[in-house]
Image (cartoon, rainbow, N blue to C red; front, side, top):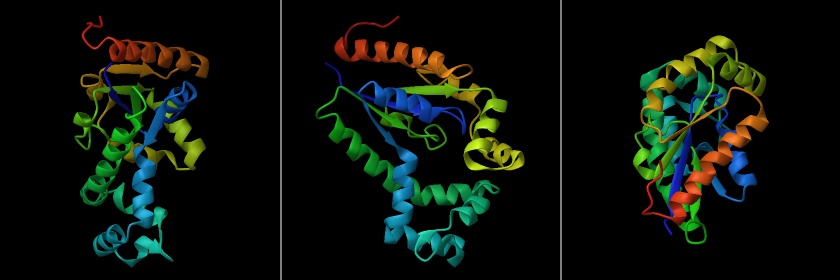
Length: 207
């Protein structure tokens, strides 16, 4: 039996969370890197101090992150995005590794949903990486519906992420999210079957 750490990635609005929920529904544990990062941003006093030092007092309102202010700051400026990532990523990665290692004590496969696996150069944390791929117009519609952002803001975020065409050459699996939820579920379960086979037969080649 081989224990597997599997990353789920893709551009904003690609449907990573939908894929993650299918794995959860199938009985597997999924960690969400963005949730871990947000919790650290909100609760870790050392991170709060660094963020305020870097971006100013408006970064927090009554000790809570000013998400609108920070979003406007970082997504319009790649250098500022790099700076906030340099503050948040190291403790997020450390906590994520601990959580995955702990989960694998009782599970054969554990998943992590993370948008910036390749942008943050953390693909080595995982045995396999799944890319969720979706047409750009679909991504924009989903984000507009979910977050209420305008098209220009969404396109700016997309420009700051590595294009999916490049990620495909690095990912171990690509799951297309371009039709119905039922079709997506079938594609996810096919990948899950392969991962289970790899875990159960670590010496067997998967073709």
